[in-house]
Length: 208
Image (cartoon, rainbow, N blue to C red; front, top):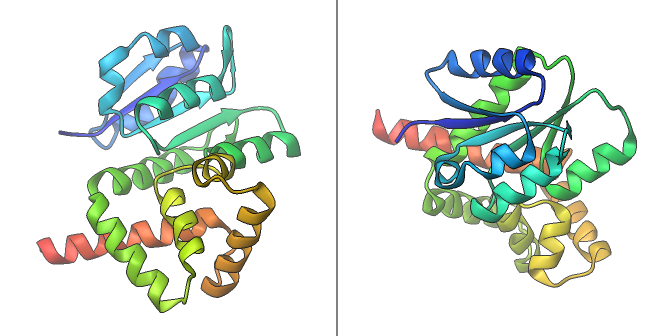
């Protein structure tokens, strides 16, 4: 079915630059310049592999786009780009489960994001679940910790995980810290990437 990425950036020159970088690996890219334009793309968005969105848009924010996309494609990888540097912004991205990179957007960051998004789309949910279960068994993760990990693998942020599980945020934070101690990973994002990479490599080995 191919890989499709959405770029939402009000600066036409920057949007074209990002699109060119993404298209170099034969990916198809749609461009929107506002929240409204992005949301108006309708069914085309259902085929998205990932989205790169500017934080500051004329009619809203990149977070508005991310929430809209996630409502249509749960767990869709989203990269937020911005010139703003603040702890509050980093925390907001973590809560929403999106990645963040500062302008000017480095080409290497775009490529790594696109590759991770591709892994998630190409590896089936069954494969991810199987490797997550195996990983959880090897690292003695509790049932509650596995619930958190499963939702994180779907691309949900901490706040969304709390809402989905009906658990208070301090409880989920404690479960995440316990997982990181057991797996020796620095962040939940690093743990998720590790499992997705294992599933993707195993899939390639089976097909070769």
